[in-house]
Image (tube, helix red, strand yellow):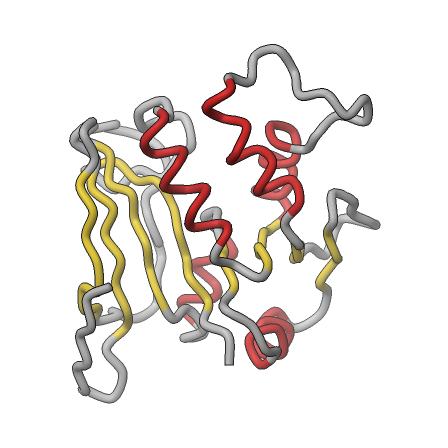
Length: 195
């Protein structure tokens, strides 16, 4: 079964709005590129899909826009070519190497997890909350930015039940950001493995 990892940038006070943290730097972009390369497919809700496509879908001309620095191109190329699944009841179709997922999100994601492969990656805010409530997230990965936003949507706001986590990895960046990866503690058993 493929594990599902939820990954997101978050501020120290829990804000997960994409504009509340620090601008990406070369080190964090290399990190996120490596994380996306480990995924067989990306899972997005409509809002995240549209936001990511507007920034990272390669133009029909085949040439990246001038604002994209050379250090951002590996990330852009990786996310552009990645297989994507988009959970939406309002979109009539998707492109960008994506497939529309409709119906019961829990059943659909469970089917995707049962396929062979290395793992799935989910980003965003609303869809991960629903998946966490369903117990479908196998790893949580937070890139904690050394910023206090003071406003904006917060991480997993509205979660129905507490989820106990155990740390499996920690990576510090020169910028002061820290990537933390956790797994849910299932059935009271602990099996910490640092990787």
